[in-house]
Length: 122
Image 1 (cartoon, one colour):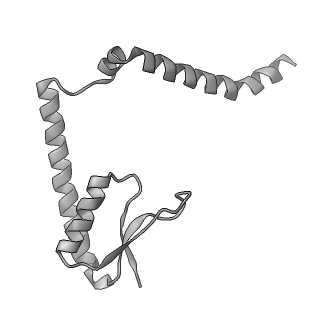
Image 2 (cartoon, helix red, strand yellow):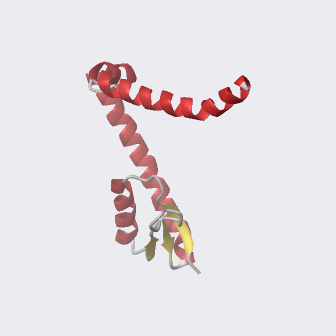
Image 3 (cartoon, helix red, strand yellow):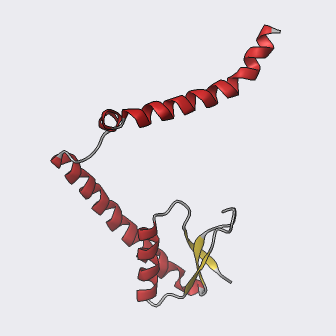
Protein backbone atom coordinates (compact mmCIF):
# COMPACT_ATOMS: atom_id res chain seq x y z
CA UNK A 1 0.00 0.00 0.00
CA UNK A 2 1.25 3.48 -0.84
CA UNK A 3 2.42 5.76 1.96
CA UNK A 4 2.37 9.56 1.91
CA UNK A 5 5.90 10.80 2.45
CA UNK A 6 5.72 14.53 1.61
CA UNK A 7 2.84 16.98 1.10
CA UNK A 8 3.45 19.42 -1.73
CA UNK A 9 0.81 22.01 -0.81
CA UNK A 10 2.44 25.44 -0.41
CA UNK A 11 5.86 24.05 -1.33
CA UNK A 12 8.00 26.04 -3.76
CA UNK A 13 8.80 24.45 -7.11
CA UNK A 14 12.53 24.36 -6.42
CA UNK A 15 12.05 22.60 -3.08
CA UNK A 16 9.68 20.06 -4.63
CA UNK A 17 12.17 19.39 -7.44
CA UNK A 18 15.00 19.02 -4.92
CA UNK A 19 12.99 16.48 -2.90
CA UNK A 20 12.10 14.50 -6.03
CA UNK A 21 15.74 14.50 -7.17
CA UNK A 22 16.87 13.45 -3.70
CA UNK A 23 14.50 10.48 -3.67
CA UNK A 24 15.45 9.50 -7.22
CA UNK A 25 19.20 9.70 -6.50
CA UNK A 26 18.74 7.41 -3.51
CA UNK A 27 16.70 4.92 -5.57
CA UNK A 28 13.52 5.42 -3.57
CA UNK A 29 10.47 4.47 -5.63
CA UNK A 30 7.78 7.17 -5.40
CA UNK A 31 5.04 8.84 -7.38
CA UNK A 32 3.39 12.25 -7.29
CA UNK A 33 -0.34 12.78 -6.93
CA UNK A 34 -1.67 16.02 -8.47
CA UNK A 35 -3.89 18.46 -6.60
CA UNK A 36 -6.54 18.26 -9.32
CA UNK A 37 -8.34 20.99 -11.24
CA UNK A 38 -9.80 22.65 -8.14
CA UNK A 39 -6.85 21.74 -5.90
CA UNK A 40 -9.00 19.81 -3.47
CA UNK A 41 -7.07 16.55 -3.79
CA UNK A 42 -3.94 15.87 -1.78
CA UNK A 43 -0.91 17.00 -3.75
CA UNK A 44 1.98 14.97 -2.47
CA UNK A 45 4.71 12.41 -2.93
CA UNK A 46 3.85 8.82 -2.15
CA UNK A 47 6.11 5.82 -1.60
CA UNK A 48 5.33 2.62 -3.44
CA UNK A 49 7.34 0.56 -0.94
CA UNK A 50 6.64 1.26 2.75
CA UNK A 51 9.91 -0.36 3.77
CA UNK A 52 11.73 2.71 2.37
CA UNK A 53 9.71 5.10 4.55
CA UNK A 54 12.28 5.56 7.32
CA UNK A 55 15.12 6.18 4.86
CA UNK A 56 13.01 8.64 2.85
CA UNK A 57 11.91 10.56 5.95
CA UNK A 58 15.53 10.83 7.14
CA UNK A 59 16.66 12.14 3.75
CA UNK A 60 13.84 14.68 3.59
CA UNK A 61 14.42 15.82 7.19
CA UNK A 62 18.15 16.31 6.55
CA UNK A 63 17.43 18.21 3.34
CA UNK A 64 14.90 20.51 5.02
CA UNK A 65 17.26 21.20 7.90
CA UNK A 66 20.07 22.19 5.50
CA UNK A 67 17.66 24.22 3.35
CA UNK A 68 16.35 26.10 6.39
CA UNK A 69 19.87 26.92 7.54
CA UNK A 70 20.85 28.07 4.03
CA UNK A 71 17.81 30.32 3.65
CA UNK A 72 18.30 31.84 7.12
CA UNK A 73 21.95 32.54 6.22
CA UNK A 74 20.98 34.11 2.87
CA UNK A 75 18.34 36.27 4.57
CA UNK A 76 20.81 37.40 7.23
CA UNK A 77 23.36 38.26 4.52
CA UNK A 78 20.73 40.37 2.71
CA UNK A 79 19.91 42.14 5.98
CA UNK A 80 23.60 42.81 6.65
CA UNK A 81 24.09 44.20 3.12
CA UNK A 82 20.95 46.31 3.40
CA UNK A 83 19.31 44.49 0.48
CA UNK A 84 16.44 43.02 2.52
CA UNK A 85 13.27 45.02 1.93
CA UNK A 86 11.22 45.66 5.08
CA UNK A 87 7.51 46.42 5.11
CA UNK A 88 8.11 50.16 5.51
CA UNK A 89 10.70 50.21 2.71
CA UNK A 90 8.24 48.42 0.44
CA UNK A 91 5.56 50.92 1.46
CA UNK A 92 7.81 53.86 0.57
CA UNK A 93 8.93 52.25 -2.71
CA UNK A 94 5.39 51.38 -3.87
CA UNK A 95 2.89 53.79 -2.27
CA UNK A 96 0.31 53.44 -5.09
CA UNK A 97 0.20 49.67 -4.64
CA UNK A 98 -0.26 50.09 -0.89
CA UNK A 99 -3.09 52.60 -1.33
CA UNK A 100 -4.80 50.37 -3.90
CA UNK A 101 -4.62 47.30 -1.64
CA UNK A 102 -5.80 49.30 1.37
CA UNK A 103 -8.78 50.57 -0.65
CA UNK A 104 -9.69 47.00 -1.64
CA UNK A 105 -9.47 45.85 1.97
CA UNK A 106 -11.62 48.72 3.20
CA UNK A 107 -14.18 48.09 0.44
CA UNK A 108 -14.46 44.40 1.37
CA UNK A 109 -14.71 45.33 5.04
CA UNK A 110 -17.48 47.82 4.22
CA UNK A 111 -19.40 45.19 2.22
CA UNK A 112 -19.05 42.75 5.10
CA UNK A 113 -20.26 45.17 7.77
CA UNK A 114 -22.90 47.07 5.78
CA UNK A 115 -25.78 44.58 6.34
CA UNK A 116 -25.30 44.80 10.10
CA UNK A 117 -25.28 48.59 10.03
CA UNK A 118 -28.61 48.63 8.18
CA UNK A 119 -30.15 46.33 10.78
CA UNK A 120 -29.22 48.80 13.50
CA UNK A 121 -30.94 51.67 11.66
CA UNK A 122 -34.27 49.89 11.19
